[in-house]
Amino acid sequence: MGLFEKLKIGLNKSSKNLSKGMGDLIFKKKIDESALQNFEDFLIESDVGVDATKEIKDKISKEKINSDSNQLDQVKEIFSKYACSLLKPLEKKIEDDEKKELKVIVIAGVNGAGKTTTIGKLGKILSKKEVKIVFAAADTFRAAAISQLEKWSEKVNAKLIKSDHGSDPASVAFKATEYSIKHSSKYLIIDTAGRLQNKKNLMDEFKKIINVLKKQNETFPHETILVLDATSGQNVINQVQEFIKLTKITGLIMTKLDGTAKGGILIALAKKFQIPIIAIGVGEKEDDLLFFNAKTFVDALLSG
Image (cartoon, rainbow, N blue to C red; front, side, top):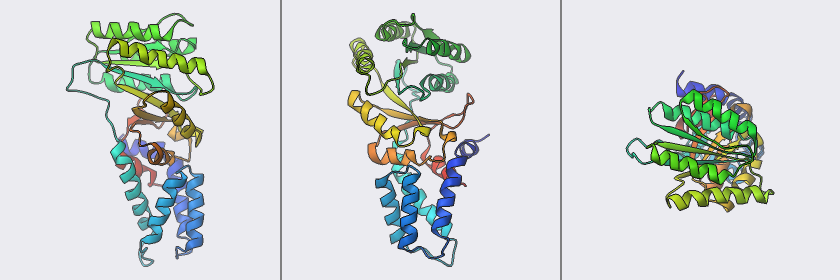
């Protein structure tokens, strides 16, 4: 199955929802202020965000929609151009085929966002390059996370560095980095405990992991990726705001887009934060994590 077809299936709920909203906009055959206001309300309810919604509404209002031709296609084209202009600059590859040096990636996020599963799926993609991959189980707070990462490491042939449940996460990160350097590994992906902004001890623990890595090499980590759950809606905005206070977030991975009709949340995030989007999750299967491509994403979003 091609990338577009997989995305189309994964974004089915969102694309149907968006198509319905656009259909309602042109129902009267004349796009008047009342119809535009209803469309604005619809986009906000679809988690596209207030700022992006206003700009989309203004663009539709200023465009001369030809009532003699397919109005829906014209509205989709305006939406597509706007969304692509916002999302295209945020495409980012973490694959690095040219450099031989170790690439250290820290995965962050709240409980339930899908961090550990995302690490496994990411490892599977990167393992296709036939390079050495190391997983670090620095989520020592949850025994199940260590067990889950162990299963993934066996699936993708990655080396797992772990410690006992409840041990110091920064120590695990340190040992994993030492191992990765010694064995000329290409990627080190570090799992961390799910954090909430009101848990100061967990936030301090995360800072300690980053500091330990930087003491080993000031360029570490190369990526600090925040994993977000699309079904959380506008709450992901608050999560990003809290995590960027803690450390520099270099990329986002949005999971569970197949479980929501509000895939427009990526547009809201892009407008507000301009943080690169690494990948999106559109299903539970091992191959359902896809590196982000703006044009393909928007086309799938508008395919309903």
